[in-house]
Image (cartoon, rainbow, N blue to C red; front, side, top):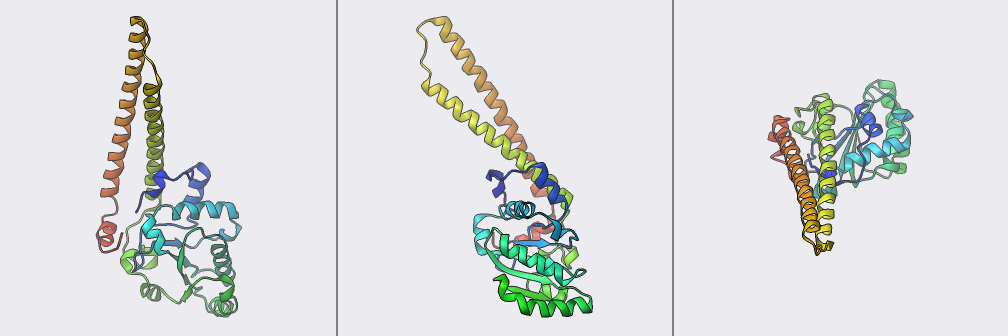
Length: 257
């Protein structure tokens, strides 16, 4: 998983974090066969009641995570509506078509499994496919899905082997965004310190010069402490990234990054 959002201005605030916990959609790090990042929309009963702004905030954040190279390939969307109705499928497709912020390559829909709803979905997609202006593939089963996406790039809920824990993902993202704040704050402090040094003229008398040098030394010490803190946080994050999801690391080695 990329760390692009470390330097993204998009805020990781309480509202965004709350909606991430709701599993509106998730980015588990899986890739399509051409390296396209995959975003999954699990079954979520309150999807249609979600305000447009909250939906856009979540998908905007998730699409900022992959590297620019990966995002440029185009995202693959998986919509799981096996236990739902055609109205939910249509609402999901309409919202994605109207507000998805990234380059969209393909939308894979696991259609409702109940016979009546599946029949309605078949009719509905034939009637409205052109309205969505996206490449949509309706799937009958997980086996059909595996024809488009390797199992090793899917979680167990979709018949795959990719290890994923949503609460752990949120914990890691929170740590990453906190680290981003530390890095940005330290960078601003360094810039200001450099500007102050360049623009400050030494006084003509010895006592004032000593006082100025003492003040600069204290600022320098503070900056060193901030840099050490940033380095410690970064090292910890790197260790967590290397030690988490060993199964994903093994499978991702075969994917284009």
